Image (tube, rainbow, N blue to C red):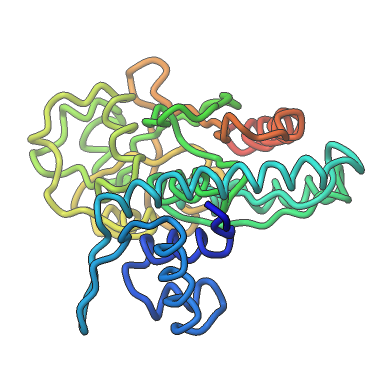
Length: 303
C-alpha cells in the first residue's frame, strides 16, 4: 500500500457508524456532508474493500466495514493516549481530563468534585459528559473520554477499574405509608406493584434490586421512570415506595416533601462506585490521584 489511511478518514467512518446518518456524522466531525462522504470513499479505495453499501436513500455498513470500524476505534483511542502522554509531561495533574458520569451520580457528586478539583489541581481542566453507562463505555473505548465514574458491577469488556467507595440505598416512601408499616424498611410488607423503579437502561435499578435482595418482583410496578425526580413525584403521591441512593438524599432531593428514608434491613445494601479507563491509557497515575479526590467527595455525600 503506497498510501496510508488518515486518522481523519477513520474518524469519519466511526462517526458514520455511530450516527447512522451522513448529515449528523458530518456535523459531529465539523465538516460538510460531501467532505465526509468523499473521505470515506477515499478510505475504501485505499483499503480496496467496500465499507458501505449505498443507495439513494439509505446505507448499510458491510461486514468488512464493521471490522474496520472496530479497528478504527482502537487506532483512534490509542492515538489519543499517545497525545495524552505528551500533554501530561508538564505534570501528572495538569492538562485536560474528559470525565464521563452517569445520571444517577452526576447531579449529586460533580458539583463538589469540580470545586475541589479546581482548588487542589488548578492546572487540571475537567470536561464533563453525562450519559448512560452503555453510551459512556462506547465513548471511552472510542477515545472520546478519558475516565468514567460508574456504578458497579457492570460489564466492562476488558477495561480497567478502581473502586472509590459505596453509596447506600434507602427505602423512600410517604410518611403516612411508613407509619402504616410501623417504620419498617421491609419491602415485603408493601402491597404488590407498589415499588417504583427507573427504566432498565439505568443500572441503578439492577443494583438496587440486587443490593436489597429483592427477589419478589410482584412488588414492582410496571411503570418505569426516566429520572430519580420522577420517582420522587410518584412516591410523593402516596402510591408506593422506591429505592434511592444516599448521595441523592444527602443532596436534599427529599426536602420540602412528606417523604422519609428508611435503611433496608439487608446489610450492606449499597452500590459500588468506581472509576473506569482504557488499559492502553498512559495516565493511570492521574486517574489514581483523581480517584482519591472522588473517594473523599463520595464519602462526604454518602454520610
